[in-house]
Image: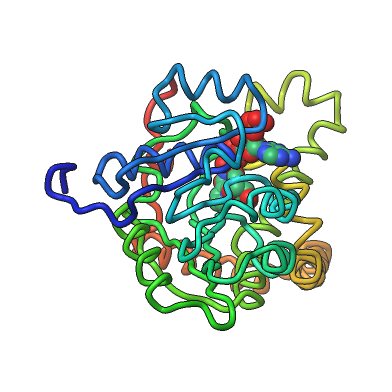
Length: 310
Ligand code: NAP
């Protein structure tokens, strides 16, 4: 689809927070002409200056209120832990009939923090694009980030179907597949597929770092695919991930409990030389990897399709 062919889904979209997700949304909206005008706000002057320099957003504003005024869609693209405070700041200027959304990685907590601030007549439709990289900031975004990825909509009780449909059209226009999900289910699914794996990667890289003896030389020098992939995940933004664990506590602890049990079972199999157990386990997990590739959510290229190092 080209810009000329597309009809804007929204007249004015305001992006609050200008990091990886917001900047990718801007470039993806631009690519397909999905918004008449996109305004943006970030808390630091440095980020706003960078945004202006690289042409991120049609207009960068110095206050969140200025960015939100007159917008028919406002998307909160800040860390999960500050969504409520940011919503409180912009609530008085939200236009009646507008939609407020967010892209936070945790949904129940965000809904509880944001919903009380929403004025009558404003639609709240939380969302979460299941796409990202380990990079952050306004310069890390790119138009293709959401292509062929899932974006989950988590409508709250009484969400206006038309507002949900418009947001769905926006995400689809940005290249994503869209599904609706209940907040608690979302948080459990993400604890399994994203939050616990990140914690495990952070732990593994932390363990290697503790073994200073090897980190200084062999771990980096001989870093094989397994460890390298852990380090990529463990390079993710510390603020974002601190907030994810603090706000998706129950589901993450539930999954980590199960993980620990399985780890002990594998530990016992190694100690007792139970090769049958190990082989059966690894056969089962290999099938999951195949399923992800068949679903088009990853590539089976040895470097996961990342191409040569720049
Ligand atoms: P990011 O690149 O780190 O950018 C975060 C933005 O939020 C920056 O503009 C930052 O402003 C602003 N911000 C940070 N703390 C703030 C505060 N206390 N008050 C106001 N603004 C604040 O983040 P991101 O990766 O785009 O993530 C944004 C949201 O998307 C998060 O809720 C995250 O959970 C969710 N998400 C992330 C991914 C991913 O892989 N990264 C994937 C899906 C969803 P300054 O630059 O001025 O500091």
